[in-house]
Image 1: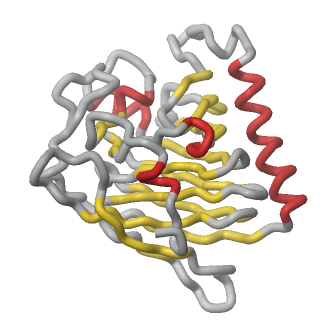
Image 2: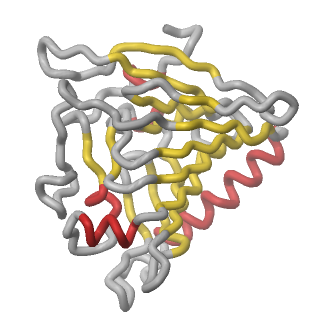
Length: 241
């Protein structure tokens, strides 16, 4: 999938890009503001501790640096892959889009992903894709149905227009998303209390398949736009559009 395996800012042509599948979203639960806040901050503190740790920011015996920075937030590789086990697990402490003034870009990965998005008080996550989301809704089990809307993807080349499909993870909730390999997506947190717990079941396979030189997730990411747009392109939600 990658033209240059170790390139951490590779761009694919968005005009001709077609998702090979669709992201599947499953609402898991709603929590009280107090409980959601405690859970989110418990995870966020792990990431913050890792970024203050010399050991977590230094390559280990396998050359893996556990504390990393992504476009959406600071990350800690909680569990790394090893011989006979190709999966890894990351925790991400989201940046607040409204504080930074910029949005994370639409992108895809060279391997499938499973993410659990968790929000606390005063915070939502806007999820985008170039394909409609498939939402799990089991009557009597699924706690809520997330709000969805469409808009135009921002900052495209002149003459190019793509519809962006958006889904909102509400405050104080857990929402899962299954991301097939190569399917477009973006996450932007509006507010200070949001984390992701993500599992990457193909990480070692990806590195071998793409001929990458190490376990750097940014080298397993392909972007669909050149620049990060300003916050206005991802901070608006239904009712504000």
